[in-house]
Length: 184
Image (tube, rainbow, N blue to C red; front, side, top):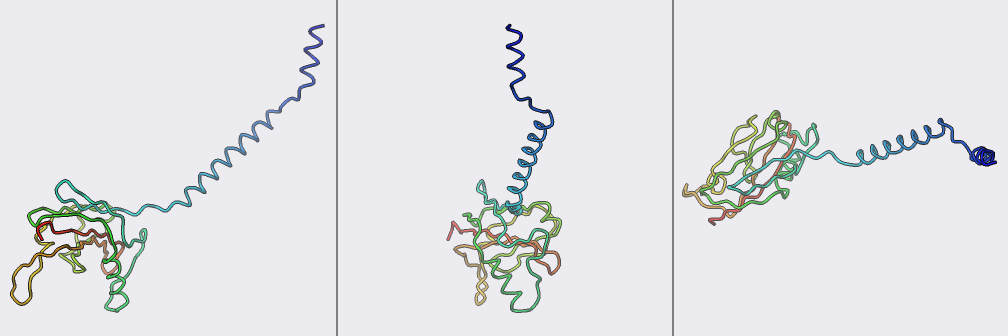
């Protein structure tokens, strides 16, 4: 009798088909992948960073103006083009303090170096473009200005240094750091 009872219990329970279980698993996996892709598509790709170091302090900053692989602006003599560049150079970035006796080290990511970059100080280019990923400057050269009437070097309270990724007349990115003069 116990055998018959067991059979009736097993026969009364619904059997799950292998196909049904597989289709539920497949639907769950497809749903999870779709949600994952949706979440990733909502994220912005991070911009490259530039790092400015003074002594043991550093500021790693994201771009003030950047278009992933595109051109932020094209330099020309037009007032609009010049204003767009000024706007990028004036945006806030990182902040560091330096003495005029310090070394200021500037590092860029390899992609930025491959395109070429130059350093601007308070909106004016400091020197010719380079394709190196690291440069070193004397803080004195960044934190002093020459008086046009006397020719004397005068300290500035601060200077905005900008890494400008440029390929010819195309500006591809701008990173800014304000350097405060510890001696002024």
